[in-house]
Image (spheres, rainbow, N blue to C red):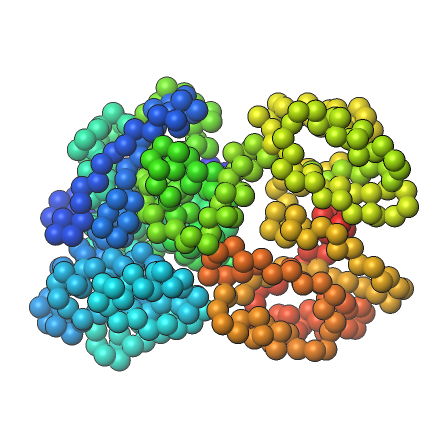
Length: 515
């Protein structure tokens, strides 16, 4: 989705950032990163596409800028006491790197779910690490509490003027080189980078538009713009953990309303496709959040041509375990792979007749499960060159009288079903009443046992599928038998647990292949 921002027309909150950005101290540790022309993307999108290579910073992320600028401007007394912060990754490395350079002590709280590679990176820079909580919010609350007890400075990840100014140097570097750009696309988590770039761009030239880009399941800025006030998201998706923020920063939002032209949201599939695009043009493996701006650029570019567009490639601290999922979803993100449920007669020759319709199209997967004596459901993954080719395929299926459902955008199908087809419930009775839920729990030692203990033994679990996406949290699909009063009690019990359950009992994919 795309949402334009009605700018206030004044620079009341933004004016001070011109001097703050100009006088930033980021270059004690950060580099003025290059702008790379992306030939493959430019040809594909019919626009001139450029990447601002913040993945080439010493810590492989733009976060080095804001963290250092904030810490470098602390008083001598504050530096002597040391600093604290909380982070699940790049901000932690930025703070640790700054403290190493300035030779001041720092303590960083990180969730226990943080991948070892990120914890080791922070420790290698000399910082002390305390693992606490299952997510960023829990770690942050603890860090703020300890900072108050020790009377030490807490370094905000994004909602601080000096942090915003440090990130704003990215915008200054871009426009110092090229003022002929039509649009700059910026990833959004808490909004520090967008506010900094927007503040500089809006007040130093008028041609270049600035767009923020968010993931659909963590779009705190998008919701704030709609409501015209900061809102706290009830749930935050964690795949792009670098931008998994539940509420836009206050200082950031004030600037964004004055200086930014709009915000675009993208799906996880589109995000994965952008990771692949960056790799093909630079041979760099971006982290999901690092490719977010490009995913938004691609969406914007689909309706224009012959423009000069730039995306911030903001980070390359990707977890190796996540690569398989990124590869799997990138084809769907490019709309080159479709997932279809097709019903066929249970008789000899049906498979051959169906496959003849596919012709020479590449089948990525083909899953079959006997439904009953007369029909069978087939789950098919198929590559298509474009949307027109897929429309032709659907037309052929219709003419051949095959009933089918497009499951390409069905979350249950993509995260679970394609990995577990063949699991129809085999024992059915009048008292059976299976309900299906999805939820997440943190990936850490004992997490599964803890989940089952919290759930208890009062209800029978009839289905359970655990899908680790290489992130801090794993997706879980769970079937629970409950009916009547038992179902009412179940609803009450699930609400009391420290997990967010979303019911999927009416999901079409579940009914066709698992129920």
